Length: 159
Image 1 (cartoon, rainbow, N blue to C red):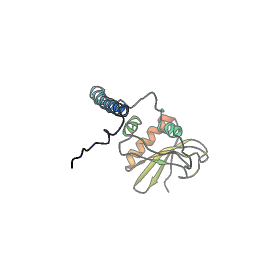
Image 2 (image 1 turned 135 degrees about the vertical axis):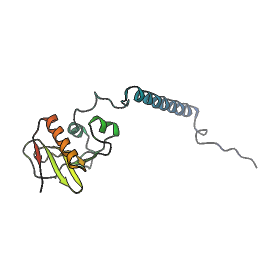
Image 3 (image 1 turned 90 degrees about the horizontal axis):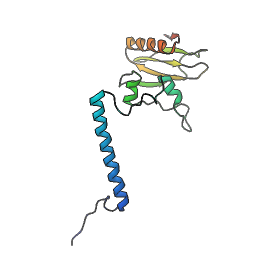
Image 4 (image 1 turned 180 degrees about the horizontal axis):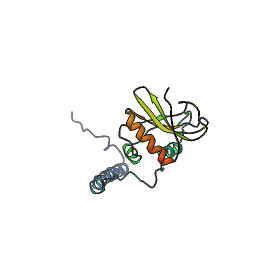
């Protein structure tokens, strides 16, 4: 008894195999271009500076809210974190329901368990996005940077 083992790709029609080969070749070419650009300039290809919002808060406001959710999904790629000047280990936190409601836009610093959350808070329950920091001096530096970037007062809550 003899048998022939056919792979899944061999069972596909010829046009599907051709498209799969073309897609793999395109992916390999993009990876080579990506490595070349990082070696040449130090900036990754997929970061398009002109297409990104100017600040992290503008990025948060531009995120779509999926059906059945209250707020957008808070996730940044490593390239986006670098673009906004955040460390690779930065975690984003929704500011909705944190602290007292404010009547004007401000940069808020909230002490939480094992660290601080710093972000731009919107008035009247508008929420916002914050970044979790473990060290107080890094949180303070980020709060000063946000305050200067947006021209807003800082509001620190220690209670």
